[in-house]
Amino acid sequence: GAGVSQTPSNKVTEKGKYVELRCDPISGHTALYWYRQSLGQGPEFLIYFQGTGAADDSGLPNDRFFAVRPEGSVSTLKIQRTERGDSAVYLCASSLGLAGTEQFFGPGTRLTVL
Amino acid sequence: QKEVEQNSGPLSVPEGAIASLNCTYSDRVSQSFFWYRQYSGKSPELIMSIYSNGDKEDGRFTAQLNKASQYVSLLIRDSQPSDSATYLCAVNRGGTSYGKLTFGQGTILTVHP
Image 1 (cartoon, each protein chain N blue to C red):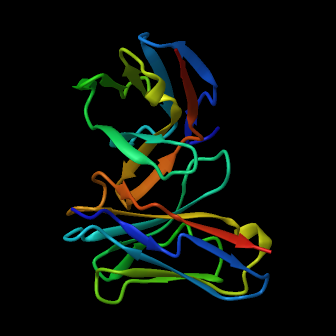
Image 2 (image 1 turned 90 degrees about the vertical axis):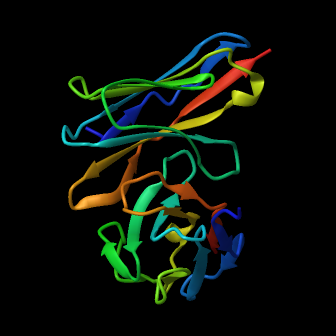
């Protein structure tokens, strides 16, 4: 079956602009996660959803970052007033059933802020 | 102290040898442990999960967990050049952080013919 999909695969934007990154989880997976990964580092947790609600958003770095999952499936990560330090690969993962089980990652969105 | 620590490597082994990758974690209440493989320019791919003390084998891969020592390892038998990648250890603390995985920085493995 289809895996996690993310769009766009690459996004180049200018400092100060607004961006939206989309994630479509594996069909039937109820938990969805966002991470970001900088070069040479492991992924860093941002937020996760169990259904429609954000169960843990403790990893969001500041209030410029926001994520939604209005119908319990597709999620959008929104970044306002982008900064050069936001440049990274943004990874989405999903898991079947309760959070804490195996997470499967999408291909990621490479965000570059000029 | 980092929450999850891995030797960044690179670890170089000859084809056919056993590659041993190690990971330590700081939070004693951690409950679930995962190994991911990440090829350059690609996203992490889950290869093993382990939840209880002891060994878990899947094909050429064996994960070992020792909660008392806060240590988890991955053995790759009969290493192949296609195993060359970065291996990420991930730990789930459970409790109120039930969905959060904390990753190590990864160990770069090179298998040379």
